[in-house]
Image (cartoon, rainbow, N blue to C red; front, side, top):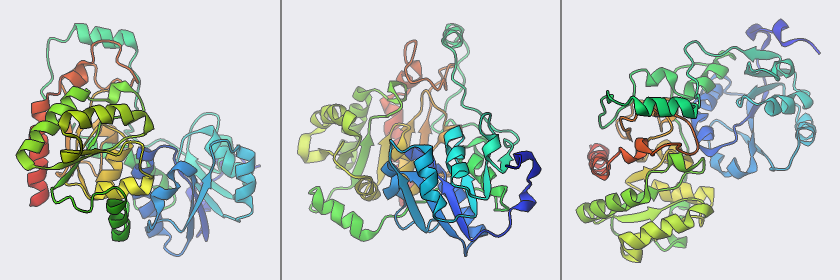
Length: 386
């Protein structure tokens, strides 16, 4: 096999059949949509297939950038995946994840051109290993000792505002890493807003299935869980306080979302804000397409930094998000700077730490008051009505 260093972008011709190896998490998948749209723009006549975990396959229904979905199961190994792909005769593979496994899959598939980000332990399996983008930001997990040192020296609070996002968010965002990869194929690297599609008939079917057809109140959404870990979860009592205050002001109806593990948390919040009269607990009850359809019904989604946050924004729905352990500059919803979204941070000097659990006093999330979030939701409603 030829070494990756002997290949250059000029060796990538005009592919007829392109395989894109998709990423493994819901939020990340949504953030790849600008790159996929740019790929479609560059190769409008090519057949573009997406290799994706089967749990995410339904995300891509009716998407203009994708002609074919190839799902793989959790237990499927690289050899069986490679064998399945080999029969499809792809002439180019674009590998979006940075893992060795994803490069091995397209290597075993025998796809002649294999493009992906340069990383240790996998460059040999690519024909073009794309160097990291200049100025690329990394999500470095802070050591516990560093967090405690920053917390102990917390005498100079950094300023906070309603949308406390760094000025360079437009160039550090994760979407640019995927755009950087398609740019290696000659595609336009300029940013686009993430985009997902849901049909009106799907929205109507979801309304009927979950008994929402007769709801005349404006619908808002709460998504209080976060699969990554508790460090990304704003406290439940603050969700409850916000939901009660917003319900008083707007007479809204709350849709509570989450995974199966979030059912008790969502039930606690539902009970506190009014049972069926003003809230319904849908945690663990929806398919991915049903989640998309119901999010599309909402005026505003109040959510932690998690997959449904990205889904809602990509469907054109305003989101309000308390950020603690993670960074809106790197993985915020939608196109950076979109005025529909309100991204809130505290002045905690150890944030973002990118840890699953807080090793100290959770000051990053506790420092975001319910009052700030209420104000953000109301301002988001005003922006949405313009």
